[in-house]
Length: 207
Image: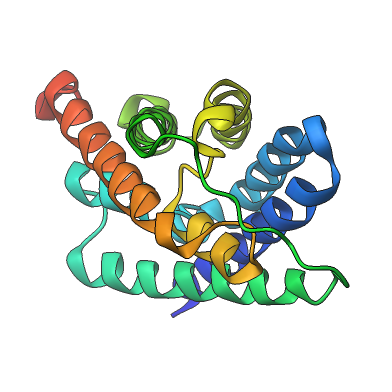
């Protein structure tokens, strides 16, 4: 149960940063979001692995470092944390947040797939690989991956790279619910592809 609570807490603060900084910080928002993810990973990574993202959990499951039961409960607590953050963030605004939609569903889908692949691929290599075990940079690497992908692909898809972030942003009112499928499909496909790619590149006898 402790690791599930950690996933709730980490996802909560990540999505809170997405909603609040994304609405107020302008071009600096990706830095605030990446930094929040980084510190939450350093804070909770030793307990739960610091996924805070259903797509990352899927990648870790495919990689073989998360069982089916934990995967399901991680998803439940991640989504609950995201929804709670979106609801809380909505209370800080006394004006209506206009729900945004990407201009092109296909381009956004591909952008979310690519961005989530990059994130999950980095997570698998710096936080789950035997040869990088015990390193001190994994949280920084993961946080900066989100920052980089937000600047690179955010203008195309609004840069969720995380189904929980998309759901939390929907609760907050910043994402249009009609487009949530883009993030669920694109992010989970990106996470799955990262898990498959990792297993292809890193053979069992090398890990």
